[in-house]
Image 1 (cartoon, one colour):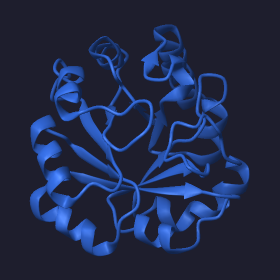
Image 2 (spheres, one colour; image 1 turned 90 degrees about the horizontal axis):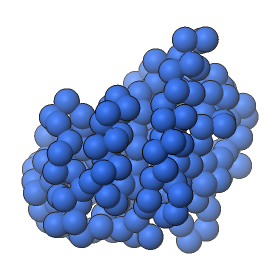
Image 3 (cartoon, one colour; image 1 turned 120 degrees about the horizontal axis):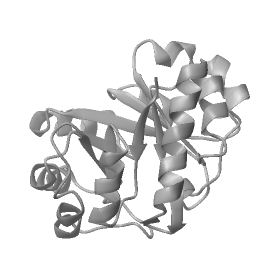
Length: 215
């Protein structure tokens, strides 16, 4: 069964609802964009998340020291990282004993190139849709059927997290095509950027459960 990550959370009530729905992961954005939070604000959002649910912080070009500060303050289980280099990943591992997920922004179903090579250095690879000038949360899906045959070398060695345009109406089809370990949703269950729609969150959870039963 695919686990669920609700990401881009900006309100404690949404994080608590994600927990009630059985999410395995809840995520806050510390990188950029309309869902960007400060560390104190992220701490408020995650305040009532139990230890049984993994906390994910999404980072971009912050320094290792800044990532270390946030990871400690927020008691993160996962650092999700856009960009970087192999040396930076190893530096993060010196202070952080949780998982590091590295993002590969997929363009035209392509898994090649330096970004993909870097992503394989993490404990998980997050596949997100490439959209110019956006790190994530675009709401645009990728061609899962074209992508699926190219994932064999990844799925047996790394945790596979599928993001990019997932929503209640299409997540079952994405799971059927890709068989990810985790489905990662943000804009697909929102009423407005950063404001989650609880009915859509429930519908997403139900669609994932139904897809898992049928596969």
